[in-house]
Image (cartoon, rainbow, N blue to C red; front, side, top):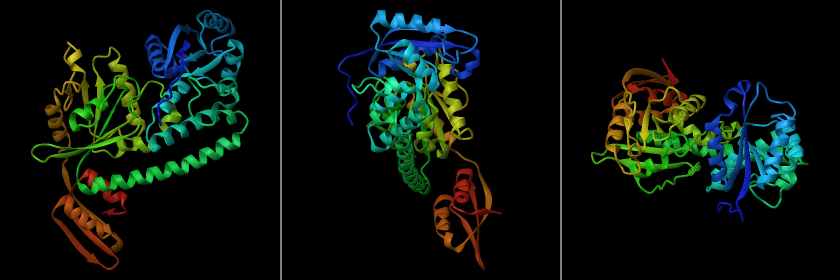
Length: 418
């Protein structure tokens, strides 16, 4: 699918609300700057920006009627076709703002979903984005009247069946159910692929980080064949590459979608099949753009999402990237490394750090297996070496020295630890 090209650059006024009641959804100057970059990634141009502070959002218009009138005037004077909010809006707020501003109104989640719709290349990526869009649209259906009737195209209209979404909730729910079935098939395929990797005994390393931190560039520098570009959400579709060191040490690297502040929950849910790689990885490389003045906040966003996805206990290495653009030394902890993926600098240190992090301690374990699970004994011999097997009526007792990932894999296959 080719990325959508607009005939002209759409102009937009950006609006954010700085409000303590909104907590993580509150806006500040940094998130407004990021919203402008997101708009640029979607093919638009920022012609005005408004950051309002108030103690609580207005229930009807989010920013209040007076401020809405000011923004309407700004949009008219600047020739803006869009008004995009940095915060998530309720259906009634979307509807009321569309009427008051007399133009198309989008919120930050809708803009991010639009970018994803234009960037997904594989059938899996398109499936996950479409599922996220339908879930978002269903949640906002009563407020999307103006936006969903923009059949001429433009930012916020890329994706599925806009002309039917206003009136046919049942159609959306049927489509979501169908996509969820397809999504479950994707998860099963990924699970099978993951089992094969586990059986091979080659450690898997997931590469994560804030969008545009240089994950794809790093993967390309390590394994070749992957080109990164300097733009937000350049990589949506998962990429897996094998790495072999001169001494035969092998790894499998898996690149994942980039994170961003206020990443729509529907998108996180839709990409769970891809992001499950984090939970099952032997180690995680958290790539940080150290040249960004916002690197600490970006790292916090990534760390919180890693925890949300159930990978908090996985060994993690912080990779401070783009060091060729920095003068200050990186605050390295144990296993952390500083690299320049674009220049290929620091990669030997990174591999050495991975070797150390993956040197897993082993412990003696005893498992009870059913006779139907005897295939696990052969797999365990390949993985752990010496294995004692005792055959008893109705059960098989297996003893070996195993690392924790091996133990967890055996349990996932039905083995019972004694």
